[in-house]
Length: 101
Image (cartoon, rainbow, N blue to C red):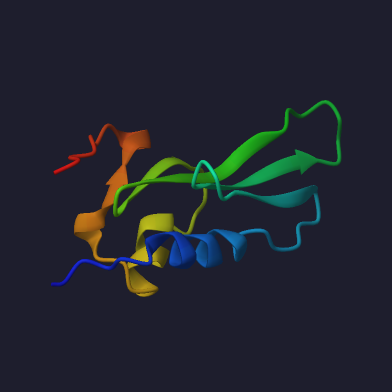
């Protein structure tokens, strides 16, 4: 399969879709174009629960490196469905290592 070159645009769109409504939290989509980082931050309404990152990616070359995914709908599957080949996705949170060839 051919490598996709517009990974940042696709990844940003997919990550932004994770910032949906929540009954118990506010979800914030965060995009840093300079560093090529996208994430969704969860801020619980109950202040006794810590805010945390739901999903986070960074782009290196043409690879999408998933640093965090705490969802029940895996981000790598959503990225593949959006057109990014699995070979261009690195699950860093589970120990995969990026190969910058």
